[in-house]
Image (cartoon, rainbow, N blue to C red):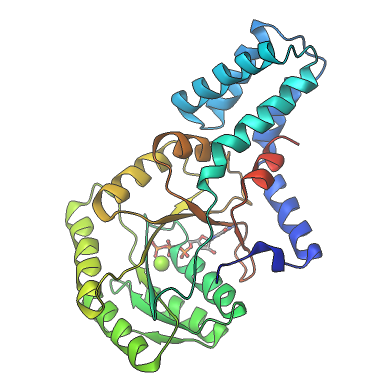
Length: 310
Ligand SMILES: Nc1nc2c(ncn2[C@@H]2O[C@H](COP(=O)(O)OP(=O)(O)OP(=O)(O)O)[C@@H](O)[C@H]2O)c(=O)[nH]1
Ligand SMILES: [Mg+2]
């Protein structure tokens, strides 16, 4: 069983798309106005290069897109700026499509997911939204409050648990690895489908905290061999080029299986997905487009590019 975006009612989807478009509107204005009434010349390519770099697409992805675009314009003998824009659309979809991968459910019981990321990226909120999403797909859910540093963090997860009517395993002042261990064992006993382990925010440069994450991962494996099955990194979509550094660092430490990009409803630039696709293509399972429980949507490359280029 997989998570299928097709089950989303059309009116909900429309509001998602408009929020995503609004969030990415600055980038999309930069990327689209340069084509208006333009001639296909060096100036057009230079403006496009600047717009892509400003959108945080990074040097490598920008270069690849420009080179492929020039080649395509030549091969297909394109003469109108609008045709070039549409060729860019196809190339961007090609670049981002490898990131589009569904989260496959039901392959383990319980399916154990560990959620990591820097401070304030949206980990706990994403877990709350995901709990709702998974329940809509008839999965029972258990949450582990692995952010044991702050009482407020625990309470925040408990509140999401109450909103979703889901049990939260927590300890007053426990070791996060022990909380995760208990949660997995409890899910095994209760035959729960999915366990999500929340973790405290940390910078990849805080080596002792990265070691702590590795310990949580290792200890989960003691409760259930081959778990955690999913290791998700949550990234704030407004982070810019540093998002790529985060993906690399957390992937090197933990072996990421997926990403969630949050806050794309804000003032995110969006281009960083191109940089991720080019340099470290970890699948993007979901994007966050708001603070509410329903504001999570599976990543779709074509929809995303259309939000960027329309
Ligand atoms: N607009 C918007 N806000 C979001 C989104 N996701 C999360 N937030 C907000 O971002 C803030 C931080 O979210 P948290 O879920 O607490 O982030 P966290 O990664 O758990 O933070 P720490 O545990 O402190 O590291 C909260 O105010 C959330 O409501 C989103 O997709 N859009
Ligand atoms: Mg949190």
